[in-house]
Length: 349
Image (cartoon, rainbow, N blue to C red; front, side):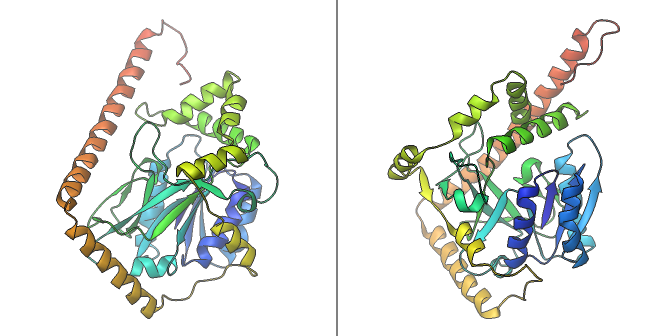
């Protein structure tokens, strides 16, 4: 697994413990300008050889570049079979079998697995362990401004892999995604308290503002940072917090779902995470049967051909949108440089 962290010390230890217990053999961590507390949390895991730490002191936010570097190291230095590019507020849940067994069941002709990710909603109570108090999530989460489902990809280790912004897509040799089968769900906890949200907005906003690449597309970070500077961030966060009545209404309407699996997992766990055991061949075979059944049923569906065609068109449209966004950012940067008078300093954004 790869993990990019900076100051999320409340989640780092739980994230490592969880994934190391659920089938991950090694975590490659890039600590970007991390405080001493983060490095102290990582030290015992590094001493047990289950974590490799890369200290990155750059002030810019080269997220895609750094994650790509880690993903390639997993293939070239650590002989990984599969790689999950994880954020510290994400916990990947497999209902049947651990992560290693699920990925081992995937046929060799497929090189990546789509993992839907669902956001847990912030609640009024901000005190205590996050998994104990955050037990309601969206039934389906979507990318900002788009009606495509929020998802990440696990992929076979590859020395030429390129990980896209936000870890949402990968390109490289033989990384064709497996259709239909979705055995792993990402449990995402992006908003745990207002203080945590504000730290994240300021950190990300400054990092993006310092990014010399005018083609970066982290517009959400920029917009939230501008809202913070204008004093509107507390109201923005308060509007996202759901009380009991709002949660009940969301569950009735099918928008929200109660999900305390992670809470129960941490409550049942009694010892520190260690190196995971090898995959159980019988469990892998059972998962493989379920996978083949799912693929067969998907192929028999009368809309299977149309769905496959729409997915191809969607991938092409997303690539065109990304290129258009880059061209727009370049044009904005060029226009900004022309609008400055002689001797005026370069704008901060």
